[in-house]
Amino acid sequence: MLVQELERWEKLNIRMSKSLSLLKKALVGEIAMSNDLDGLGSNLFNGELPTMWRKLTPQTDKKLGSWMTFHGKRHVQYKAWVDSGEPLVMWLSGLSIPETYTAALVQTTCRRYNWPLDKTTLYTKVTRFTQASQVTERLTDGCYIVGLYIEGAAWNVEEQCLIRQPPKVLVQELPILQIVPVEANKLKLHGTIRVPLYITQQRRNAMGVGMMMEADLDTREHSSHWVLQGVCLVLNTDS
Image (tube, rainbow, N blue to C red; front, side, top):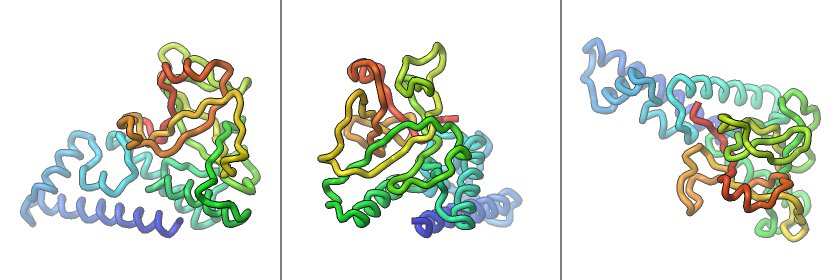
């Protein structure tokens, strides 16, 4: 998993380095200005994520400035993963293909307990942890996820359930989420609603394009209320 992530990370960094070097040469007249380099220069001037970089980075709607901060955070997580092993709390948004990580969780647990893969699903639970530093032990099965955001509702940390959004607050960061693989026929949930987890705030279409998985959130109101509110989780915000 880590090797695959680092390979994609390295491809992106090489593309960034080479394209910036070529753009610099084109601007001083050492080489001809191609359409790709012209587009790169326009993107940088307008503060947009360059198209030629976007193809190699995790799906995002961020502008260049916030994307550079995002890119730096990815480097920190990868370095910690290499130096100290898999993080106790994974920043899922920083992975090139987050679906691969959750699929690996399921496969690992299925091998450990000899469960059939096609009859295993993921169960999620919002914890009381709000910072990764508060987590001191690794889960036996599954993992902790940080950096998710909730739209269409807010989360009450004390009551551990969904509540209505405060005025003028459209997006709220969710506390650390626990993801655990379980056998589907043994999963009995009450007082919860399954909401989609999207990659970006664009959400995409009803066919599920752009949706990564579903998450279980505790609620004290009927699920239809939250469906009408359009409640969902997202990995990446625009800012």
